[in-house]
Length: 312
Ligand code: FSX
Ligand code: SF4
Ligand code: F3S
Image (cartoon, rainbow, N blue to C red; front, side, top):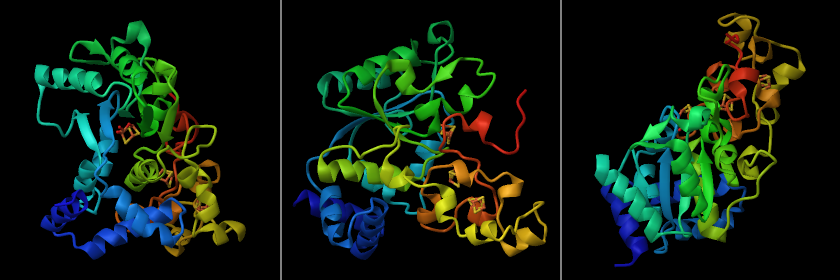
């Protein structure tokens, strides 16, 4: 049986018919900004036999990023990703634990040296030689340095890995920084706290389709997803232009779906495709649910953008 049929058979055993599968491929194609004529090629890419090997490391973070991917409302996307990628190591979903897990990582890095894609979640604590973040007796700093050194490419998933994230917020007691800063590696940054799972999948599909990672902005974020501001695509934009603002949560303006700028919306400074792509199978997104954008895909957003918090 061909690998493509095997993947589709696995999908079907999860109750996913070919139509759903093609619907998903259509979504990924549009997220990437590709013409609809590319849908068959996207479907082909995700069912191809050649699967890139991935080592998936988690540093200082909340696991929300893995959760966002594994708990999408397409309940089978996790299976699809696991079939599309050859995941040699992922702390949350792999079977081995303890020393066996350590060995898996070591073996995977040896076996696929120079050939694996490294996916990273989480920031890296740097204070006192990195001792505030350890896995298996090794500092996250040392693990990240070793893993990025021999990676074909490093993709950061979530604002923590991209820019330091929540643990790097003031007063940043562990001196956490991004994976790029800690290791000197060049990274592709799928920012967001958490990022939209579709942007992770689309980045992988871009690699499978074109054999290279997507073009990025100066913050390392793929342009297909982060090339525009939230504010540019926001359905509340006409209210912004008409100066129709929510003044207080629950007021008349809130009920009418007016602009959230005056209750702290950071959409005008935030690069992401949430307004176009939405979350949870296109159900909704923060601003759609009446919550201001807190700028979660921007560097240092906890200190500079989040509307509800004050510095200690
Ligand atoms: Fe950070 Fe992700 Fe926010 Fe959490 O791995 S971007 S705290 S959703 O889990 O890193
Ligand atoms: Fe812009 Fe936010 Fe108002 Fe939407 S709600 S128009 S993103 S300020
Ligand atoms: Fe984050 Fe703002 Fe989107 S808070 S999820 S970038 S709407």
